[in-house]
Image (cartoon, rainbow, N blue to C red; front, side, top):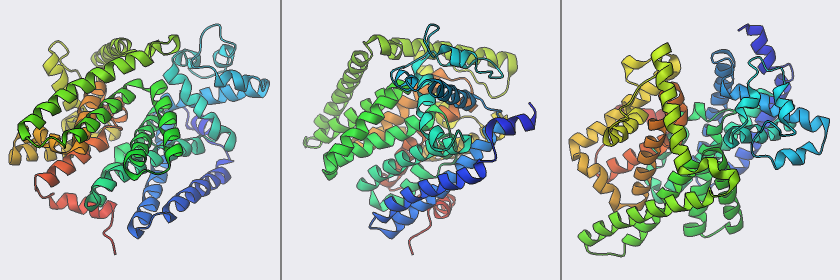
Length: 467
């Protein structure tokens, strides 16, 4: 595809003025939030995370425009422009858009997508699901603020994700203040997470929602302040998660229930009885989460998010990736789906420990391979020093570690079993990546294992020591 065409599609002369204004706007918000922190080191962390996110947005914009030549983000960007055209034609369409969850062939907005002159002529087909229609609606906000600037729209979505990442950090920082630098690395400075949460995609929205929900619960239950705003954050984030990727809300709900039950378990003094009760309450949490999700998806508008439908779609998607892999090769992979146990193990393994270095087929996949090698080292070293059993039993000694374990493993199975492409998997797994790294950090600390020197140097680089 011609480079001049790509430049004209994603950039315009106004970006020279609009992006600095966009940067100043979000920097002002970060500065306001940072100045409310009493610890100078945490204030500096806000700025450092913001600068790193800005770099991520710039890289995401350039790579998606010139390397991927658009991809999914191109379709969401085109959808936002189609919706703007509809509003420009008739202001009443704004209310229609607000009340529309997905596109159908007889919908009044259909023609705006069908006749949008998009080069691949597929925008209308991509908007027939709720999860794909919503990002385009959300992009209308920065689209009007920044005159359709693709770069500024990416900054808007990236900033939402950054807000969630900061809140995720503050959630764990509240319980483990001594590990603040390591936690900051896990939440704010993992390269693949920062990159894939820096643009107009579904993933930055849902990634941010996880942090907003957890921190709001912390505010309500432990800090006991900002009650109204915390409830609003939970409702908004739950709504966005549910209608974009319902399984993320399900896994988070399950993890929170397990954490709550684990807190209750602390009152049981007898160790064996406490362990038995922990397993029992974990099973109850799974049942509650299952029935709650099916209740929430009982309406006609939300039936596509029923667990059976999600599983069916995941199976079809996985088979589709396998077929593409046989035809095209590249970064596609296959897992054993016939054996339930192997399906779970291989799905989790693909999410955290693959691609292996010899499976790298592109620079993007190389980044994931390096992170996967680091995760493999930390996990195997823990198994070697303390044994695989301790990896799981120690989690039951701390409700927050158990929360990380449940979210990390269940989420990894969800995305690993439904994806057969390392490039796509590196994007889908960004919500669980910080949780797995935090899980490792907390287990190492609890097991009194020292972090290797090279890891300490990485922490020193990402989050300099207080001075």
